[in-house]
Image 1 (spheres, rainbow, N blue to C red):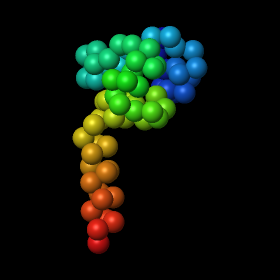
Image 2: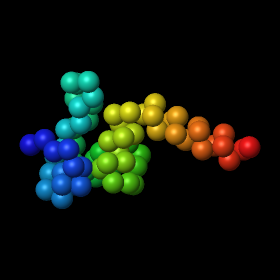
Image 3: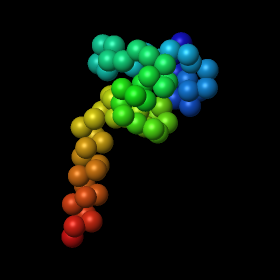
Image 4: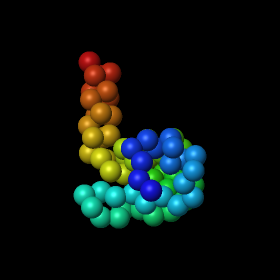
Length: 69
């Protein structure tokens, strides 16, 4: 099953496969994915970090630099 809503997958999925550019980058339970991604957040948070890590780093850098001004 595929779903555009991570919250739905969190509730009913036992094993989750994460794809990036057509390649499997993770395949595990929700707790296993949390361990792999070093995240305690929602599946949506983990997916953002796993699929688009550069975006998350840019956002963090933006706020860090803005706070220093």
